[in-house]
Image 1 (spheres, rainbow, N blue to C red):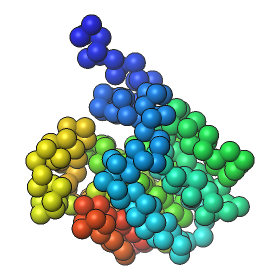
Image 2: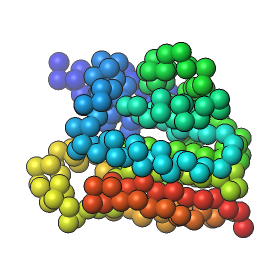
Image 3: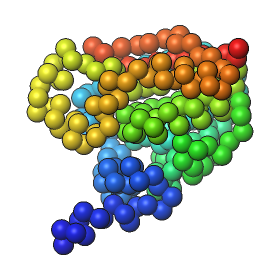
Length: 245
């Protein structure tokens, strides 16, 4: 019985990265969990009451986005995707995720507006998309759920598919919040790092420098144009502009 419990995650390996299946099957791939977590009160609790602030700031950063195709890199719980579809109007939202169950859940939230969503099952580390194909890419709470090497792959692929003059919006945890009361509360920090096994290393990485290095390797250049601190820096919303050398 114990052996079954320890290996249960292997049942979710159908095209799914090992780290995702192993550490997040219970929250992201298991259908009962998808139903449970995709309720606004639950999401708000997980984000310490900050979901609406994060959503509002993210959407405000998209008001002056460049004209062209819009890519949301992976599904998320909550009302972000419906808000984006509404915001884009007649323009389609390209939505990518490695989980078919997550894509189905996102479509179910749109009802009559499903026509505005173009879902694609794809691993964000290896995008089957052409170079310079999107004017805007949004990454919402994905980076901290990946080991470092996977983060590098995703950032490199994001830069590859983003067109010159394009905009990248990243909503995430902030840098290591060593002075924040939540971080200093040992039980809370222990709980967070227990269920977010890659968060500790994410906190200590310079994502801006990593992104700039990946862009440079592709002959491109990114500039951080906005950096909004949310909840005293526990979270952040960053906007990058892409240029070519």
